[in-house]
Length: 486
Image 1: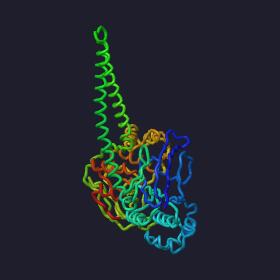
Image 2: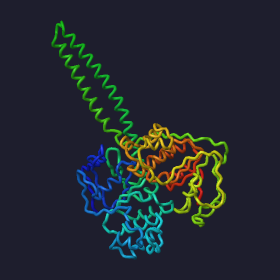
Image 3: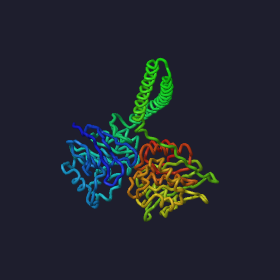
């Protein structure tokens, strides 16, 4: 057991306008299992890179442990998986690797296949297993759930629960609740460490905000009353001072004026003290403005349907045939393992050219808003993107600001934004579109917790007809009216 100490950490990118971190200090135990949470673009991955020594900074990071990072970069994916793992954890025995893989429900035969043939979920699992076999290292795990289906998330969460000594960046609330015992919170003005899982952290964070809001309101009233008293005292002091002219006892009048001035100064000091107290409040409060959506009402109850439909590639079915309807008011979540064809079914509905068998019915003149998984094509500035997408630019940017975009992010090229910010661009575009049917494919990948809550509330408030794929179980349970297993 040892400590990682961060003292007066200050960092800004060379051409950045603002500090990412400014005079940040805290310490953590290397035996802790920390969940690292915070808004998109606030600097979580940057902080992990600072721990890895990738950037210059002022202040100190004191640690006696070696840091490892996930996702581990595999340069040659044609290598046999066992060869890859021997590079990641050279001191591990084969039986140890086998043991870790069994804990993650991964078949041993993956070790003898080329790494590129493994699914994204299998790659995640084998690399995590290998990194945890580096004894005495402290693991920095950056967003491991984005390629994991619901079952795999539960398996990885159970695995991490048995481990210690890591920082885990994740926005999946139920995942964090299972496997962490501390929360590292990247706030607006500082980084805080708190014991407990995400739910307990969130409860304490909301209580603190409520307490500070009540304090803020009380101080505002106090300041107003003190300012009124100060003005009255100053007026009375001036009036008494004026009475000195022609007064018989100037000493008595002067004494009264001085007493009144002293009272005015005391009130002024109390006002300044209250203003200073107020300035320390609500610095870390996370505001999440209400989002709006205006779905179109379709002329028929039935919008679309699948009848014995299965996606196929080169004539081979990737899933069993499915049959279901999408009716007005439905919010359907497609569930199933990665590679089972969920995304392909959504693409079929969105009009993409996908090979399939069976029948797909799409209602006449049905207007669809589609959020794809892939964000890699986003390039250029937001204004041009809005114009090309036939969106009202001011509305689009208003939605983005409600999703916590700031001035710096508005001016960046989209390809230089974080993955979470790119996903927010696609969601904002969808929220600007009036549609009969909203099709969202893993919309929450890389999206921060506060934005997830905003989107949950939006869907509850406006009840759009939707079909989506999402592995965040909290979001799915809060929004779906039907869950269809693929």
